[in-house]
Length: 438
Image (cartoon, rainbow, N blue to C red; front, side, top):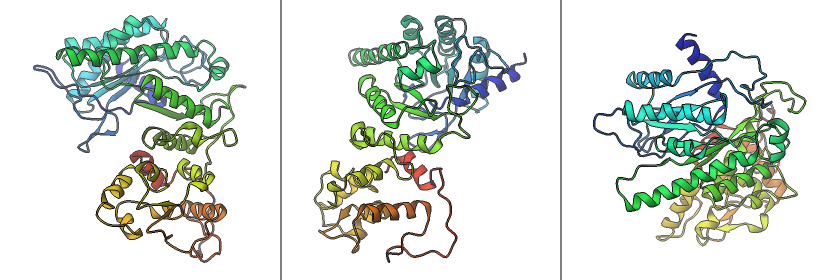
């Protein structure tokens, strides 16, 4: 098969993997080498200086021995099959880099022959790039569950980031949709990679020239909507992964209906808004001090699709509010909808000089159209508002969907026809999920 035909097939097969958005490595160039991933993100991620970086994202092979019913590359699926040789991937990476198409490589693969054989081929590719071609650009690979730890350790010496897809949130889901896999085969190498990262950091403190091991850390991906698991189970699993394996990111991928099977949900389109809510909740776990059991409980096992998770939590915990902006601690400010990490810090700094009013905090970046219901400045609300849960919810939804609010004198009545509730994130919500300012 022609090389470009292979590239078309294997690049298309890789598009369902969303965990390639990676950054944080500091692999510098070396004398006589080419490429660098220093202080830069990869694959439509942004570096600290604002650059957008891209990478070659392909599968080594889509010929899989497993028959996971949710996967487009499953063994029983009738699709064009192809595989690169290690030499072909090395050639593509170097040539694409020299043409300034890419600055890194994201390499995954279906399981060919066996996990060990697949991991051996991937290791050969990254080792050739580093040692023979002196390639110092960013490399992110997928470790293969079930592969020998020795192979994973060797590969980890040559890559910047490594990830293992946990795929489904529960063992029951794996047993139903991917019976050839089990949770232990995924978590065991994840724990091994984490232990080697910790060990490597200790070595580098003692020995300046010690080689690096997965310096950009590890990540994983979960499919959302392929099984009946609730958001609470998904979020608790993410919380555990961050706590026990020090993952850099957990990625969520809305299930794309690529096949018909009795065990799969009959979806018309992927649950993109649900995926979006999980990403927003993920920010709250990592940067806002929330716990999974706070955001969701037995009575509320899924996020409200109409409200972002922070507003959803606030509406169920009105006893926590109002918060006085001029007195509240930083951790308390972070729990107010419309106040993000940066705006909370600005409030802490600014109120050392003077007492703040609503005009002041708006200039500091607070989103008043959400925060106004949950805060006071100098002991007063912004307006004489009815602080009932129903009133707040109606006005938050009216603002989000640009719908006319109830005729209560607070929101101006619109003469435009009422639009149907959109089941996609708004532009503002999309921006918030990228910046983390919720």
